[in-house]
Image 1: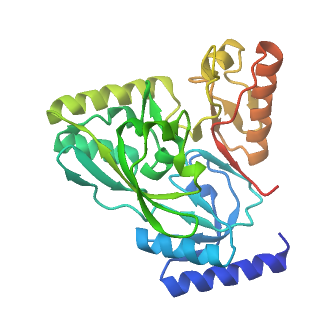
Image 2: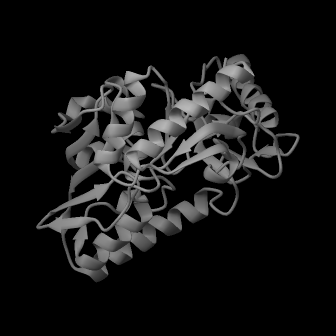
Length: 309
C-alpha cells in the first residue's frame, strides 16, 4: 500500500470509529498482541466494546469497502514485522462475565478459554476441561474448532451470535457438520463471532477442578507453555503420524533459524527466543521441506500468516 493510500485508510477508519464510539489506535504494533511476539503496525487497531458496536463497525467498513482482519487472543497467528495495510479489529474488549443457565453458558468472543473453564468449574459446570491450557479466546476457538484429546469446541456449541459480512447480527444454531478439523462455518461464511452458548455437564466442582488440573499438567509436560509460540504450526495429516510425531522422528527438535527454534518438548511448536518474522518463516519452510523430502508428507499450516502479498 502506498503511503498516501495508508493515510486515506487511517483517516476514513478513524472517522468511522469516532462516529461509533469505538476506540481506535493508529499504527499500533501487533507484536504485543500475539503470543509469538512478532508483528509490525496495523494502520488502525479497533476495539469494539460490545456486539452491537462490532456489528455497526463491520457494517460501516463494508459500506466503505474497507477490508479488515479479526484478532482474537493472538495465539494462532504470526504477523509480518513490516506491518499490514488492513485495519485490525481486536476482540479483546468483548469479554465480561459468562452467563450460566442450567447446563448452558454464554460467553463473549473475547473470553479467554482457561478463564471460562475455571469459572465454570467453580460453578459446578464441567465438560470443558479439554479447553484448559489452550491460550485462545472463545471466538478464535470457534473459527479453528479448537480442541484436544479428540474433543472439540464444536461438540459443545449450541448457539453462536455472529456478525455477517454486511454487518448484521445473526443468531446461528450450527449443525455438527458445520465444524471440522481446524475449521468451521465461521470462516466459511465470512462471519465474525461475537459470543457462543456452550452446553456443559453439571458435576461436583472438586471433581471438575481435578480434571482441569490433570489436563493442565498434561499440557505443561508436553508443550512449551513457558515460551513464546503460536501453538501447533502444522495441521495433522489426514493419514499416518500426527505432525509432531513425524517432525520428531525426522530429528527436527532443536533445529533453529536465527532466534526461532523447534521446541525440544514438542516438534510441532516453534518457540521464539528473540527471532524475527523471517526467522520463523525460514524455519517453517525447513520443517515442511524435510517432511516432503524424507517422509513424502506435505504438511499444511495450522497457524495463520498475516502479511501483505
